[in-house]
Structures are given as structure tokens and as C-alpha cells.
Length: 170
Image 1 (cartoon, one colour):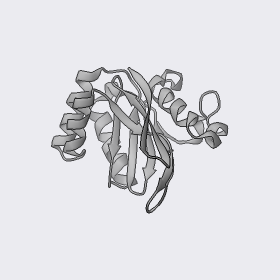
Image 2: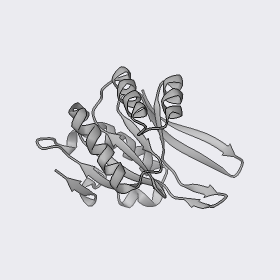
Image 3: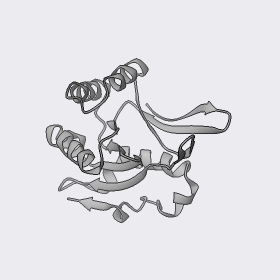
């Protein structure tokens, strides 16, 4: 299951999100870019079957990581549980995800009481050797939803969403 969700927080704005239960999404709060990169790389090193991953800056010191390969809900729960036990993810995150049966990341920007929360911005795409970006189905699904709710980004995300514009590590 992959879907786009809309959640009305109040009358003045709507928050959209991308939900899935077939590929791994991580919401890394209060980490900073260097730590987010290290966590993303560590997860890939321990679970290389996850394939390519994309790191996005979601707000201030918060980052999203989208892994590409379809792995199934039971494997996702195992990985998320391990990360929660290592205190790399909030324990509440694990409980909520298990209850809902999916992973969700915000895809749009909105106004808050303290200012503007901008849409997530792709920063880094890691592509393992011998891996084609044409196989990036999970990442492309996520980017399609991100593009749909952020019209001015349409120019950045053409047919293959210009993955080459990102900092690509191989």
C-alpha cells in the first residue's frame, strides 16, 4: 500500500503526507545533516537490500530518509524497532507506526505559530554500485507526491525528477 494522505490540522492549512508499508521511510528529528547521513549510511550498511536512499531536509535539524526497495511490513517493523531500541528513532514513533500499519512523511510546507515550515528538500541521493536509478520505484513514488503538492518544484522534477541535480554518492 502506498498512498497520499491529507490531514487537516486546523481551518487555516492542510498537511499532506506520503504513506507506505512496502519501503522504509525514516523521520530523523533533532539530528543535523551529518548525523542523518551517518544514520542513513549505517542502516544501508546493515540492510543493503534496501538499495538506494534519498535524504531530505524537512525542517531546521530534522531530516527524512526514503529507501527504495520493496521489503515488506514485517522487515520494516524489525528495522524501525532496532532503530528505536538504539534511540535513533523516538519510541513513540515505533508505537504509532505499528498501530497505524504504515510509515508516513510530510510532503508540503505550511505556516506555524513560529514561522514557515518549508516542504522537504532533497539533499543527497546514495546509489550503490551496479544500481540503476531507473529502478528507483520507492523514491520516485515519494518524489511524485512531493512534486504534486509543491507546484513550483515541478520544474525541478522533470520526467525522472532530475535525480542528477542532487548530490549523488556512489
